[in-house]
Length: 163
Image 1 (cartoon, rainbow, N blue to C red):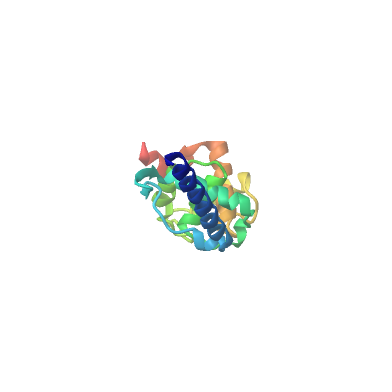
Image 2 (image 1 turned 90 degrees about the horizontal axis):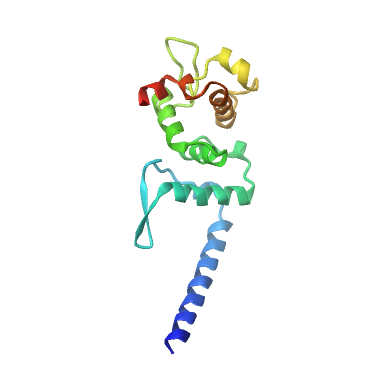
Protein backbone atom coordinates (compact mmCIF):
# COMPACT_ATOMS: atom_id res chain seq x y z
CA UNK A 1 0.00 0.00 0.00
CA UNK A 2 2.80 2.44 0.93
CA UNK A 3 4.65 1.59 -2.26
CA UNK A 4 1.54 2.26 -4.36
CA UNK A 5 0.93 5.55 -2.52
CA UNK A 6 4.55 6.68 -3.12
CA UNK A 7 4.28 5.75 -6.79
CA UNK A 8 0.98 7.66 -7.15
CA UNK A 9 2.45 10.70 -5.37
CA UNK A 10 5.53 10.58 -7.60
CA UNK A 11 3.38 10.35 -10.75
CA UNK A 12 1.20 13.25 -9.57
CA UNK A 13 4.30 15.34 -8.81
CA UNK A 14 5.81 14.54 -12.23
CA UNK A 15 2.56 15.43 -13.98
CA UNK A 16 2.28 18.69 -12.00
CA UNK A 17 5.84 19.65 -12.88
CA UNK A 18 5.23 18.97 -16.57
CA UNK A 19 2.06 21.06 -16.56
CA UNK A 20 3.78 23.93 -14.76
CA UNK A 21 6.74 23.77 -17.13
CA UNK A 22 4.49 23.90 -20.18
CA UNK A 23 2.64 26.90 -18.75
CA UNK A 24 5.91 28.57 -17.81
CA UNK A 25 7.51 27.99 -21.20
CA UNK A 26 4.45 29.10 -23.13
CA UNK A 27 4.76 32.66 -21.82
CA UNK A 28 6.80 35.30 -23.56
CA UNK A 29 10.47 34.89 -22.58
CA UNK A 30 10.78 38.58 -21.67
CA UNK A 31 8.19 38.21 -18.94
CA UNK A 32 10.28 35.42 -17.39
CA UNK A 33 13.41 37.52 -17.01
CA UNK A 34 12.98 39.27 -13.71
CA UNK A 35 15.61 41.62 -12.26
CA UNK A 36 17.90 39.93 -9.77
CA UNK A 37 21.29 40.58 -8.23
CA UNK A 38 24.17 38.31 -9.26
CA UNK A 39 25.03 37.40 -5.66
CA UNK A 40 21.49 36.73 -4.41
CA UNK A 41 20.31 33.39 -3.13
CA UNK A 42 16.88 31.98 -3.84
CA UNK A 43 14.68 29.62 -1.84
CA UNK A 44 13.64 26.47 -3.67
CA UNK A 45 11.67 23.62 -2.10
CA UNK A 46 12.94 24.35 1.40
CA UNK A 47 16.61 24.48 0.40
CA UNK A 48 18.80 27.36 -0.61
CA UNK A 49 20.18 27.36 -4.14
CA UNK A 50 22.72 29.66 -5.70
CA UNK A 51 21.22 32.10 -8.16
CA UNK A 52 23.80 30.87 -10.67
CA UNK A 53 21.79 27.64 -10.93
CA UNK A 54 18.65 29.72 -11.50
CA UNK A 55 20.44 31.59 -14.30
CA UNK A 56 21.51 28.31 -15.88
CA UNK A 57 17.87 27.20 -16.04
CA UNK A 58 16.77 30.51 -17.53
CA UNK A 59 19.62 30.47 -20.03
CA UNK A 60 18.69 26.93 -21.05
CA UNK A 61 15.13 28.15 -21.56
CA UNK A 62 16.48 30.99 -23.71
CA UNK A 63 18.54 28.53 -25.76
CA UNK A 64 15.53 26.27 -26.19
CA UNK A 65 13.48 29.21 -27.46
CA UNK A 66 16.28 30.46 -29.73
CA UNK A 67 15.72 34.00 -28.52
CA UNK A 68 16.73 36.86 -30.77
CA UNK A 69 18.89 38.72 -28.26
CA UNK A 70 18.75 41.88 -30.36
CA UNK A 71 14.99 42.08 -29.83
CA UNK A 72 15.28 42.11 -26.03
CA UNK A 73 15.30 45.52 -24.36
CA UNK A 74 18.28 46.65 -22.34
CA UNK A 75 18.13 45.61 -18.70
CA UNK A 76 20.69 44.49 -16.19
CA UNK A 77 19.19 41.05 -16.09
CA UNK A 78 19.13 40.64 -19.88
CA UNK A 79 22.81 41.60 -20.03
CA UNK A 80 23.68 39.07 -17.33
CA UNK A 81 21.65 36.36 -19.05
CA UNK A 82 23.37 37.11 -22.34
CA UNK A 83 26.82 37.00 -20.74
CA UNK A 84 25.93 33.68 -19.09
CA UNK A 85 24.65 32.40 -22.43
CA UNK A 86 28.04 33.31 -23.95
CA UNK A 87 29.77 31.32 -21.17
CA UNK A 88 31.12 34.38 -19.38
CA UNK A 89 31.84 34.99 -15.69
CA UNK A 90 28.66 36.87 -14.75
CA UNK A 91 29.82 37.95 -11.29
CA UNK A 92 33.02 39.54 -12.58
CA UNK A 93 31.28 41.24 -15.50
CA UNK A 94 28.59 42.55 -13.15
CA UNK A 95 31.22 44.15 -10.91
CA UNK A 96 33.14 45.57 -13.87
CA UNK A 97 30.01 47.11 -15.40
CA UNK A 98 28.94 48.52 -12.04
CA UNK A 99 32.36 50.08 -11.56
CA UNK A 100 32.69 51.39 -15.12
CA UNK A 101 29.24 52.78 -15.88
CA UNK A 102 26.90 51.99 -12.96
CA UNK A 103 24.82 50.08 -15.54
CA UNK A 104 24.24 53.25 -17.60
CA UNK A 105 24.08 52.19 -21.24
CA UNK A 106 24.95 55.72 -22.35
CA UNK A 107 27.60 56.57 -19.76
CA UNK A 108 30.37 58.81 -21.06
CA UNK A 109 33.68 59.28 -19.29
CA UNK A 110 34.32 63.03 -18.86
CA UNK A 111 38.09 62.44 -18.91
CA UNK A 112 38.34 60.25 -22.01
CA UNK A 113 36.42 59.06 -25.05
CA UNK A 114 35.26 55.90 -23.25
CA UNK A 115 31.57 55.34 -23.74
CA UNK A 116 28.75 52.99 -22.90
CA UNK A 117 28.04 50.18 -20.52
CA UNK A 118 31.57 48.79 -20.66
CA UNK A 119 33.32 52.18 -21.13
CA UNK A 120 34.97 51.09 -24.37
CA UNK A 121 37.46 53.44 -26.02
CA UNK A 122 36.76 54.01 -29.75
CA UNK A 123 40.35 53.18 -30.73
CA UNK A 124 40.22 49.91 -28.83
CA UNK A 125 36.84 49.10 -30.36
CA UNK A 126 38.32 49.68 -33.81
CA UNK A 127 40.82 46.89 -33.19
CA UNK A 128 38.47 44.28 -31.71
CA UNK A 129 34.86 45.13 -32.52
CA UNK A 130 32.41 45.55 -35.35
CA UNK A 131 31.71 49.12 -36.44
CA UNK A 132 28.24 48.95 -34.89
CA UNK A 133 29.50 48.08 -31.37
CA UNK A 134 27.40 50.87 -29.83
CA UNK A 135 24.23 50.04 -31.74
CA UNK A 136 22.76 47.76 -29.05
CA UNK A 137 23.70 46.39 -25.65
CA UNK A 138 24.28 43.01 -27.35
CA UNK A 139 26.84 44.52 -29.76
CA UNK A 140 28.55 46.28 -26.84
CA UNK A 141 28.65 43.05 -24.87
CA UNK A 142 30.20 41.16 -27.79
CA UNK A 143 32.74 43.93 -28.20
CA UNK A 144 33.65 43.81 -24.50
CA UNK A 145 34.06 40.02 -24.67
CA UNK A 146 36.39 40.42 -27.67
CA UNK A 147 38.48 43.00 -25.82
CA UNK A 148 38.63 40.83 -22.69
CA UNK A 149 39.70 37.83 -24.80
CA UNK A 150 42.49 39.87 -26.40
CA UNK A 151 43.66 42.04 -23.48
CA UNK A 152 42.40 40.29 -20.39
CA UNK A 153 40.38 41.75 -17.53
CA UNK A 154 42.96 44.45 -16.87
CA UNK A 155 41.58 46.39 -19.85
CA UNK A 156 39.06 47.76 -17.31
CA UNK A 157 40.05 50.00 -14.43
CA UNK A 158 37.11 48.72 -12.41
CA UNK A 159 38.57 45.21 -12.56
CA UNK A 160 41.95 46.43 -11.34
CA UNK A 161 40.20 47.96 -8.34
CA UNK A 162 38.56 44.58 -7.51
CA UNK A 163 41.92 42.96 -6.83
